[in-house]
Length: 454
Picture 1 (cartoon, rainbow, N blue to C red):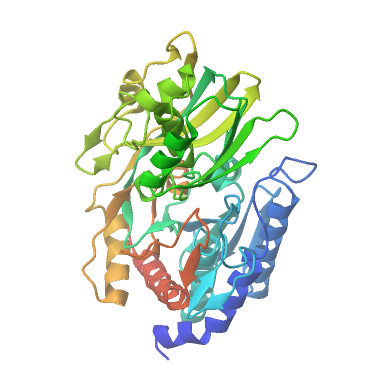
Picture 2: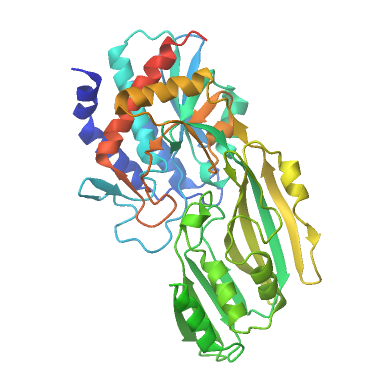
């Protein structure tokens, strides 16, 4: 059999293993004894390691931070880095987010594409490589982390314990490879307000698709509020607090990954703009409308910038009420691959912006960049092109991956060009035929890395 036929013989295993991992709601939860990211994430890791044990791989669990499975012998280490944690399920699903249901050749569920499905594809690719080459001249290690979505402390723990890899990839980005990842800023905006309550978002790196707020009754023009949202094709619901008569509104947007905020509709932003349009007199609302509005490029905030590979993105992902009279927002921003964080931070006014609003920088990290003609990028690109028969070229992206935390690694699949898999959104999915294609690509890529003499 050729490689494609071998991969086809694993179709049912790929489906069932992915479905098994998707069944775990592996969202990071509070740390408890022996479970740094919560027990459910650890259970998902145990399941993945058991799968690798059954394949005859050497497996190691590093204290439920991260685990790995290894084949081969030798000094050189090829790394394949995936993650088993997921963003919160959110709302709006038409399929069971933990069910792995397949409809018309498409599997639905949280983690199907980010990143459990690709982890399974890589796992099976290792198995096939082991079959094709029983005597390997290098080690190949599938590294599976547990908090990539919430800070990647798992990868830092791995590097501290095991060191870096010689070269490899993370199946957590676009095909045919990503030679640049934008830098990352996390901001906090705190403001005094008359809003009784304002809550939205499941994670900073997700465009929020729902926002709920409470205000005193008759504090703005209801007709203008409704007309604005209708004009923007935004749905909302209104109820009344039975205790005090306050108005309670829910505003519904469209979720998306924070690295591509223009693909979503930010419920926070539409709620704020509707309040401003409806005449709600509040300094925080005025600030938001004038300094953020509906923009996703930081232009109203004064930090818009770009290079030849892309522009800064700006997503207000979380909103919550500290205490009566105070609301905060968490902003996820990605900046161009050729820029330094210090330059971007210089564009942002921090501290007391005015008497009502304070801005602070919570986190910043530098971009990742490889020359597009570098050996690693070239080998992986060729592995993809040979299998798919296309001339697609590597790209840069706004999403941040494990490649930023370990040496000589780039993101490589499993997103195929032109396919929106609803990552971080309701009805996240992966096509079954793409899982098979992805597995074949990874087999080809690993064979090339095994033969690389660099």
